[in-house]
Length: 191
Image (cartoon, rainbow, N blue to C red):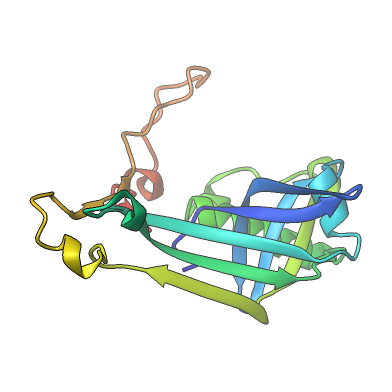
C-alpha cells in the first residue's frame, strides 16, 4: 500500500498544536523516509523525539447507497505510528532522498543532477520504523438496511482511478528535448 502511493500526510504536535502536512516519502525495507526543509516546523517537531502519525490513503470509489446514512467510500489506507529519528548519517541521508525521489518518479534520480552540499544541508530527512502500522480497507457495494433493498433507488459504486496525463515541458527548457522514457512510460493507473 505504501509503495503504490505518492504523497503521505505527516501528523505531528508542534508548539502544543496538532498539524498535518502533506509530503513526499519513500521506503527502504522496514523504514519510511520523509523529507522537507530543515526550517519546516513539522520536520523539526517530528525529528525532535515526539510521536508522529503518517498516513497514506488511496480512494478507490464512492459508495452510493439507497439511504444517505449508508453512503461510504471504498479505500485502502496505511497508518504508521512512532517516533522518527533525524537522519544524520550522510549515506543514509542521500539514500533516503533517493528513495523519496524514486517513489515519486522512478528512474528520475539517475537522470538529474545530484544534490549539492548546500541543498543537502537545507534538507532534513526523517526515518520512521514501520514496526507500528495499521492497514484499513473498505471495498464492495453499499450495505443498506434490509428494508431499503427493495426501494427503487439506484445504488452501487462509482469507481475512481487516478491516471497520468501528458507530460508538460517546462517553458524554460533551453532546447527541444524529448520526454525521457522513464517519464513517458508512466501512462498507467496510479495506486
